Image 1 (spheres, rainbow, N blue to C red):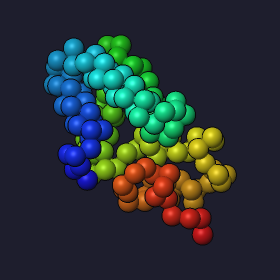
Image 2: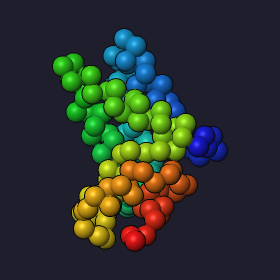
Image 3: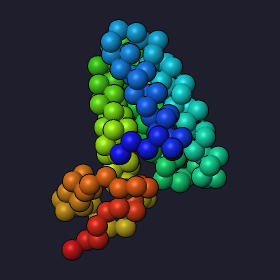
Length: 137
């Protein structure tokens, strides 16, 4: 789902490139990716006019993951957001959004195997996963 007309897609593309550069041996790229993600988070907070909006929550938890992985002994963790960011950028599949949708304040049904299957196996949709999950059967 390459959506070059959406500013959020460009943020993610540049972030994916920075994370890839970090994995290729340029550790300063991790700090740059964190800085860009802060800008991305602030941009979406202003755009959504709420710190509790789902797109803001996703960007916050993504930023937290990048920060947790920053210390040298934990930088192996950067493989996870790098692969995930490329998947989001190219295919529209956002694992972080799917995980955040499972937080108690973001769901209306009890956590179950059926909910997990619907959450992680549903095709990517425009908008966010909260709008695209099929109803419980």
